[in-house]
Image 1 (cartoon, rainbow, N blue to C red):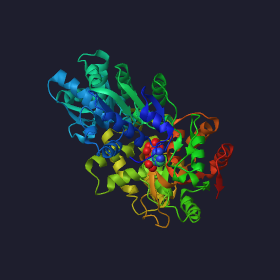
Image 2: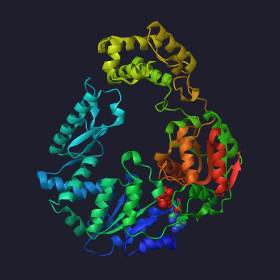
Image 3: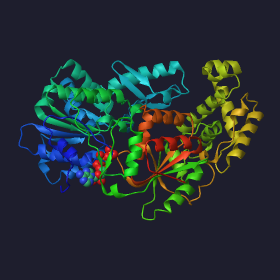
Image 4: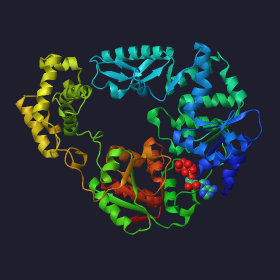
Length: 558
Ligand SMILES: Nc1ncnc2c1ncn2[C@@H]1O[C@H](COP(=O)(O)OP(=O)(O)OP(=O)(O)O)[C@@H](O)[C@H]1O
C-alpha cells in the first residue's frame, strides 16, 4: 500500500497495548486496520489475528485488500463479519460439544421456510418477528398490532417451542448463536473461551459502535482471556438502537478499556462540511479536513422548503453554481422523505394519514395480483382502521371483542361489513387523493358506519402513490441514511422534515444533548465530500441557521 499514514493512523497500526481508537468520519479506518492486520497477521506467530467487521461488504473489502498476501486469509488468521466470528468460534463448537454434530447457520429466520408459527387465522409468522430470551419469546410491537393479548401470548409460547425444535434439528440464526455464546461464557461448560484465546493473539474490531450487548460480552471475554483487543469506531455513528445497540453500553465498554488518541483527520470532506459534522457531534472532538476536498471552499447551503416537492427546484438552482460537481444524493431519516424530495415515488408505508392507510388496505384487498395472505391481512387492517376512527375514543382503542359487542356483530359479520366497505370505496389506483377521500366518505354513509369524519382529511399529494407516475424533471438518487452509512459521495442533500421529532432533535443539537436522531443527521451530513445542501422545512429553518452560525459553519442561504 503506497499511502502515507498520518501519525494518528500510525499509532493504531503500531500500538503494542491495544485499546479503543476513536476515529472521525472519513478517517480511513478500513485502510488503517487492514494495514495493521497485514503487518501483524503475517508475523510468524503461533497464534493468529482476527479482523472483524460488521457488514459483508466491509469483510469482502478487507479480504480484497489482503489478496497480495494469501497467508493473511489462512488459519490461524480470520477475516469476516462479527456474525461469522461468533458462529465459527463460539456457537459451532458449543453446538458440536453439546449435540455431537455441526449446526447450519441462517442469516435470519426468514430464509428458512419452516421457521414460522401459525397465527389464529392460519397466517404464518416468521420467527424473525420475535425476540428470544432464555426461556421465553417476545413478539415485536409491529406484529402485536391487530392481535389480542391472548393470541400474542399463545404465539410467543409456540414460537419458543419452535425455536427449541429448530435448535435440536441443527438450525441457528445469528441471535440464537449469540444466545449459545452467552450461555457458554456464563457457565464455561466446554472451555471455548480458552480455545479462542489459544487461537488468537489479537482481535481487531471495526465499527465497534454497532455492537449489541451480546457482542460486547463476547469482546469483554476475549479481552479478559488476554487477547489484545483493538477496537475502532465513532460513537456518534451509533444508529442501531432499534436493533438493540445501546450507545451507553458501548461507551462503558470502550471507557473500561484502554482509550487511545483520536484519529481526527477527515480525508473525505471539505472544511465547511467538517464544521457541520463537528457541530452535530455530541462528543467534543473536532475534525481536520486533510484529503483532496480540504482545499474546497464551497460553503454549506441552507435551503428552506414548505412542500417537499419544492426541494428539487431549489437544489437544481444551487447545483447550477457548481457544474463541476456530480448530482447530489438525497438522504433523509425516512426513505420516503428522501424519495419524494428526489422526485421519486414514496412507498407510502410511512404515512399515518387515515385516508392513505385505508387506501393501502383497499388496494391490497381489491388488487387482483395480491396474494390471499395479503388480502386476509388487508381485511383485518380495514376492520382495525375503522375501529380506530370510531368517535368514542375508549371504544376506538378497546379490544376487538368489546368493540364488536358494542356493534352487536360477530367477527364474521364484521369482516363482511369491512369487505362491503372496501368494495364500495373501491381501489384507489388512478384516483387523486381528494376523489378517493370522497369515495371513502360515501362508503361510510352508505353502510352507516359510525366514524369520526374529521379524521378523514385529504392527504398531501406527496404521500399519495396511486396516481400516475411523478414527473421526471427533478429526479435524483436517494436513500435513507441508515442504508447510506459507510458510503461517501461528492454532494449530499440532507432533508430535515417538520414535526415534533425534528423539534426535539434540534433542541438536543442546540443544547449539546446526544440522541439517536441527532446521530443519524451526523451520519447523513458526514457522507458528503464537497457539497452539503441542508433542505430544512421552513418551520425549523431559523433555528438550524442559528445553530450553524453559532458553530461558525460557512453558510450560503438560498
Ligand atoms: N492517510 C491517508 N491519505 C490519503 N487518503 C486517505 C488516507 N487515509 C484514508 N484516506 C482516504 O479517505 C477516504 C475515507 O476513508 P474511509 O471511507 O475508509 O473512511 P471511514 O473511516 O471508513 O469513514 P466513515 O466511518 O465515515 O464511513 C477514502 O477515500 C480513503 O482512501
